[in-house]
Length: 464
Image (cartoon, rainbow, N blue to C red; front, side):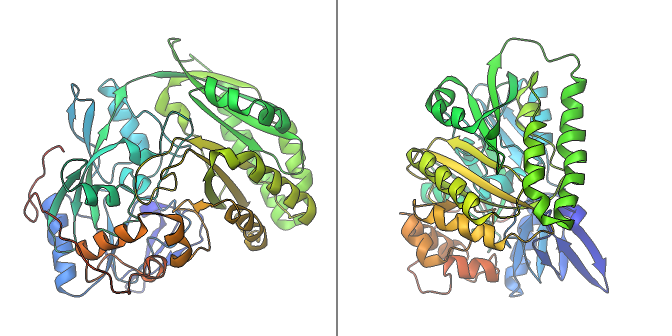
């Protein structure tokens, strides 16, 4: 269950769990504000009562970012495109808007996001707050598309921030882990609607590595999935095209829904019940990789249905270190023989200047490992994480990792600047839970800075 679908009420208390089942919570109160004024009043009341709050989107983070036993806020009733400025190529979007809905609404205006990840069920606020990314060396994470934010702080104040207004708050809030306040609305840079030609095929992983720089350079979007214990990988290429959308691609649809999800679920259950079968299943899956070509509007092709549930760890590493890291991971699997059949996903992203972005000041590769839900993952993830750490790895904030505040502070040059902004906006820790207190070392004494509110509590903000 995910998002509000992961919420149940039992014995006078709510029960929530994330999509993968790795995190559970029992919030005392659930709130679904209908607009900015109601949200600001809710947060102000929460702070005055000495309570704590977290915000939930669709529950696709694997870490305890949302976990709370107090107030859980959902922005499910604050969705949709609020305004469009076609001349500037900007739209103002409510923070709870799911990415799939956003893609459809933008298309109705002849617009699109320049890049997306491979899942489209998250809220826009949650996706940017955790550093969600797609692939393509000319594109940054989703947070780099943000031109402005409307932030409700712990006092109930509504603050506008952008590159030119409250710029320090903006750089902290673009990837904030939900620790600065509630992102009520997002102003996004958008591009004219575009169609992409999607090509997926099987190829030897060594051939991908030999052609890596050419594939990255010659394709708008390129990624590949290596199948453990095999020489094979599945590559995905996406490039802009003038071709019309494919009229019918029954095979492609069946491949996504039946082979990649239905059959894969059955094979995954086999691995859970008989873990040594994992290597055989990986080989079978490699031989089942189909050649697929589709054309459609971009937001429909970036995302892929993910119906088979898993746990995930993903790290960002310097792009130039990618071949060495993947080689170590392959050697580790050959040596340790972990019972894993899920592919290892490899993507590429342009560097940025966002304080807590894993891609801060470096062009990056992301390598993700997965384990089917219900199968032990700790030894496998720990072994791979040790490899990441030898290469200055930074974890994806929504994926599992074991790093502490001291290690993270050494990896992020603006770490303490982020902490100062957080302390200024939320000195009482309204938006902290136990996980964030440990992660940010938030109980330490740090000097505060003073933000500049641009709107009063609950007032409607203009497009940044």
